[in-house]
Image 1 (cartoon, rainbow, N blue to C red):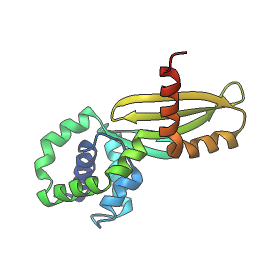
Image 2 (tube, one colour):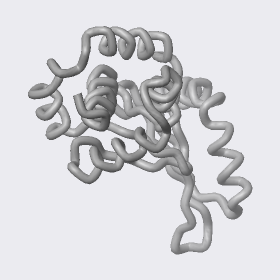
Image 3 (cartoon, rainbow, N blue to C red):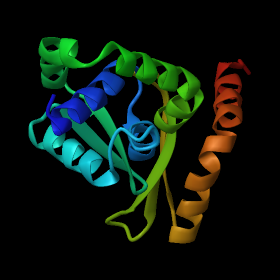
Length: 172
């Protein structure tokens, strides 16, 4: 099998077998980490999959998150049988071992941007698979504050979510 086709199928299979988006570090952790190919070939494969609209991307705080598209799912269904069983098993084992990291990177995230009011809008999100549990947006005056909030969101998000639900649920 042609090298790049194999790597593309591996990427599509990985993205298809998880309910979450995956970052470049998680994908390369498997494909490059297991010595299937080089970083160069991985990035070439990712670029071609994006150009062919088999995967889509979201950039969150300088980290690219990849997700399989319906066209990618369709392509995988036609060519999945060309992916060796041993590689599929390797991928499934990796995803099982990395489940916590995959979930953390795709379900709890924060980002910020400079807005028209000359402040920074911070957006903090918690998702459960494809459902958004909370999506907070608020403005802060400095970039430093925005960065600090984003950096703290992952570790403090569950407590903040619980606090908000409890406060809003209580009757006066």
